[in-house]
Amino acid sequence: MERKPRKEQQKPAIPSILEFNRIPRRNNWPKIHFKKRFDFWEARSHAVPVAWNALERILELPSGEGDASAPTFPVRVGREGFGSGKHYWELELGREQDWALGVLRENAGCEARPIPSQDSWALRRSQGELFSSAGARGLGKLRWSGSALGVFLDLDWECLEFYDVETAELLERLGLSTTGNSQGMFFPFVSQGEGIRIRPVPIPVPLKGL
Image 1: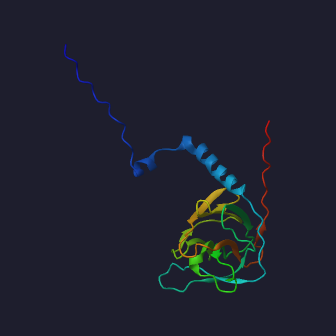
Image 2: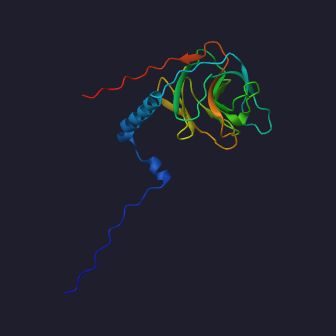
């Protein structure tokens, strides 16, 4: 008795990126919201105290406008640098409209010179627009109207993240280049301005075993 050939079971087609973006995600919204909050609180669990040096520094940032000269900012730099691990801090920006903040990398003994753009990773606000920069990369516009920012320096994964403290939204993630000045330490910095200050971060109390 002849056996009928079995019909091959068709594999479900994998949607393209464009098709995937059209799939409704209403049922996934709680998971996405929880993941966003979890990432923010995980970053916040690495909070460290930050104090500023009294010496004012000059920071150059890439303009992203071809050969246009890089804008400069007078900034305060953290007293302590970081060479490994994860570190988080928050800044209140008050009513300041134009500012810059992030991290810079440098070796000991270079505290008196201007900070070149390739050794800094930052967010800056100018004329109502928010920009991000990474080394010599051009600037891209972002929209944001908050009053406090969280900065998460993750040297294990070589990235820098900026969070809206009020909404836990990740505004930007910048990769940290390790080429060239690979021996330098990473220091927090923020531009000078009235009302800009370190915001105390509430440290969550670890749960005790039941």
